[in-house]
Length: 355
Ligand code: GLN
Figure 1: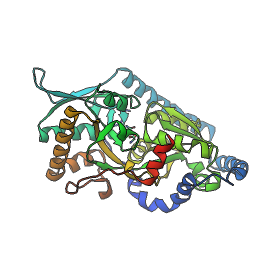
Figure 2: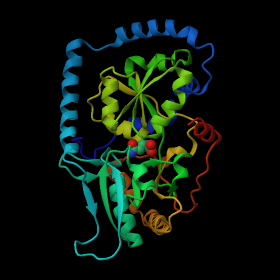
Figure 3: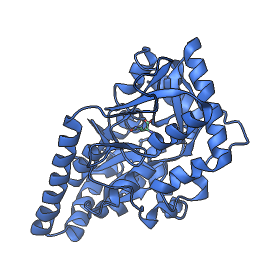
Figure 4: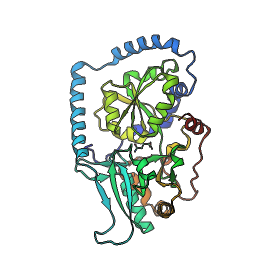
């Protein structure tokens, strides 16, 4: 970690303009692989040549690698200190304190900073929502992979960690109204940019993902057809490091998180090659979640939704997002007026059927 809430790169706001150049790979990911395999070998040779042409020198690479490794180590030390918690309940409070889980390494939504404090849009937003809805909670950080199973099993009352809606998750979890419009992006070495945009060449790649995420689901869903090798890592930084070090060809990561990571300036050889994968439907939105079919959880969910509505209207919501993403475009904000329905797209239903 080691990052303060800092201003993201202006690339944050170019995602729409990048959609056209991204469209080919997007198609490549969506189309059937027939006839693609034959061209894979040629593609691999071209890729090697392209890589050689743009590769930084060995000493440049070493310097950057040393910095990235130092940052990774610092982060590992912070994570090794264990879960960090924040609460709005006084120590002697006797009433209900909802136990909420969040991510420990998903900046700028939830992360432990260099000072060992739990920070992020979700952390601040929940504080404002609880203040406005009048409930007490304790929010603690952890690795993402076991988070949603813990909520479904009733070990936690709820979770807020940039959680995307997916059909399989909706079988055990109930989703709040959405509070952020996100997207799943593809990050790769700059030298891979051209070939990743050619559908003939998106075969046989190694994909880095974060365990338990929608990105992992997407990669696994494509694995067979695309002959991908999927490598799962415990957190967002580890999957980016894997691509940086060449352990994987690209990673799937939520767009604002990829932007935030890349603005650390360390991963000089990486870029967002696809800002937004299509066909993820409502999975682009972030929600608070509770266990499904649980009366107590319903109270919490209702309180969250009411509080969210209030902070959207009173401006707290925009202020919190702007604190971490000062140049966030209007498209990421939700509006308080329209109820946010969650409906599965045809693609999501299909993906769910495959799993
Ligand atoms: N939005 C992604 C998901 O819900 C990633 C969340 C995270 O890593 N905290 O799977």
